[in-house]
Image (cartoon, rainbow, N blue to C red; front, side):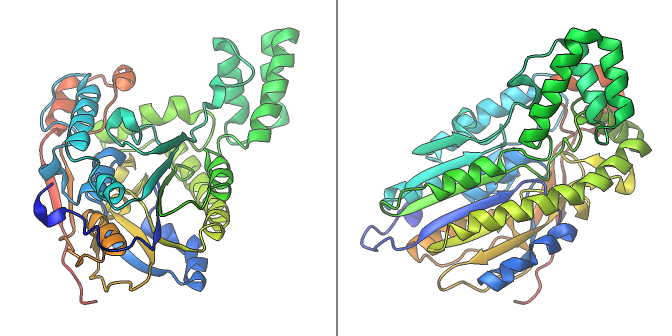
Length: 392
């Protein structure tokens, strides 16, 4: 780091700090969290720097746009292994920057604790915490093991909620032995709250048990607003995303499903967040979404490519001593400066709201859904949107 960003070790670290990311929460669904105002939080309209998790988080921890830190999808089609190359770049860059805000806070004496349900936010991608908890759930891969046909059957059972018809159909087709396993697995998943529950309950229990042994920086990524919203979304969402991307139209069936379940997921997330915040009474807290979600608007579904408001416009809440005035919309790249301002009283450096996309988010597993590689290649290329500040 340059001298400009070296911490002033003469200052005492009196603020425990929490950065909580409500992954995939849209601005227009943020009303579910209006109760935060009663707890002293100020709400702001914010812009993400990128339409998917990894570049947006690197921006939050370093204060840089994707075009500056370079951790983003390639600007041209380079093959199906592009995500592994981005991972390597992220790990290398974050370690070179000593984690950005993470390294800065460690130098100030903070213990850094990370809780993430998102597979992109861990040491594998360069996010090094003193203590880390993977709060993700393996869904169908944990507990009672199912074979391929049984997995297919359980997905059918949970599509749009279990019904007598779907359960009986699955049981009859799979025979008595599999029927017993399916019944047990169904009960297991219902008990866990799958797929509604994606790790938030575990996060709440971990936060409640945190030891108060000095200044603490707590990072949490909660995935309840992120797909899958039903059991069959594991298979359907990839196909639907590609169809919307290539042909400009999201399948009506999955659009109806997502529009039905997305607000339910957000409502559930709000309830769990209440518990988490209640355990952080002496913390300065920043709560933000890393990006939104397309629910069929403009023929699009999901995120990772589009720069529509539904993806880039996200909510931000702040409760901190000496809270600075922010101009709206607030760029997620400003979160880095906000953390340093809270921890070390540095002057706030607010960055211009800019969102950038370099190409579609396509994983190797989705290759089977792409029937025209030429169309896919044509979608790659740098695009950006720049917002105008409003007076604070």
